Figure 1 (cartoon, rainbow over the protein chains, first blue to last red):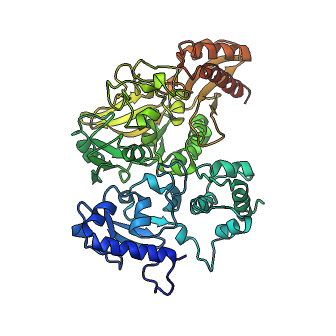
Figure 2: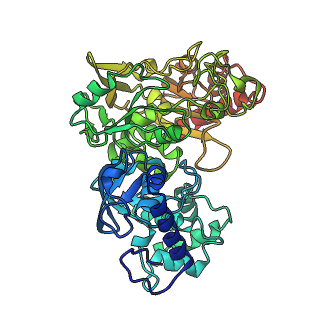
Length: 209
Length: 333
């Protein structure tokens, strides 16, 4: 789904409901939210407080999926938490939060990284691409389409990280066989064990199937 | 995570000035440089590291790989591990370094981790990471639960009664075999430290892992010119095929002439409290016939000082076979 806060709310989805309910709760406990999340999007409809009221928050500008985002964040905010909580792009997942599972994989200036092990402040002015920036439900990225075609997931929690890694792999030095793909996908763990289908999807996109 | 002040210094001198105010550059430093962040952020989330100031060195001009005047290579502190591993000069002249880096971590982490950050990757174990447990490295004087506890993956060389944690880096093992030099800009000016003197043994002060002092900023690493005719191999053995720390690894640089070993550089990983250079193996090799018997003897020499714990005696034989195999591969490649 699209996570565009400016989009008209035609349909009440589960996620939309939860996010709206969360905002109301935050408005009711303004200080608490500021302290807990330590971040808000400056100037967006979701921003319920002005930046100066966020104690210790500092400005950072990120280009996320081609859009400039001028934000205020607690210095501790990881790029992962910034993307999910501040900008409300929840396609990127938090798994282990320690760089061991790869669920949080995003691209920074075109290269894949674990967004849980880097601070938002370290990326001022940089280009961030998340799963929402790859394709849309109507026009999937070829890798997204290949994951669907090959059933490259079961529960789906690791999938956005897998796809972000797989898309980055297309531009990296990588041998042509399955073993090379497995090696370069080793930073993405799939608890459901969809690995054979993930490799098949990637090889199809690479034209190595 | 404890909060901190995030600072982006305008130049290296400013970075050094900020860090020079720290009480220590070792465990628990109140000022930390951050580059890739892959070790530091991990430890900060666990409250094992709680710096009051974080100095971001990513925008300093320390990210290039250049030919050195002596024919060697100058590698900037913030060169990413993936870029270094795939650099044409490294692939051609320092293959052991390329192989070692690509054997470590995951592609995402290698895109983040830097040369200097990997050098300073913490020597650590699960008890160090858990603030509910005692640990002489994290909280000096509290004891080492690993010695009587879970130690299957921990060190057998260079250990002490205070600490048996393993230096987990692959890159550092290759750096030691290549006899790299670590260049530091400090509060009193620049200095060059041979990587063999960069790491200190835990002894009774495992909270100290390197010779770095407050204010010391690693600016670059230099590699000596490649040795003509030498063969380089990094071999890593681990619990799973990829994305796992070494149980044992070996970096070897071998020159064979007329069937005899004329020069050898040997370092071991996964078994030492620091990246483990083995002069014992090197001197056992030089002048000997390059065959399986010599390689086994060198491996025996390398592990002669090993002290196993309750769960890791297997590492002695594993490490010997790892080294002998790496030497065999180098001699026949």
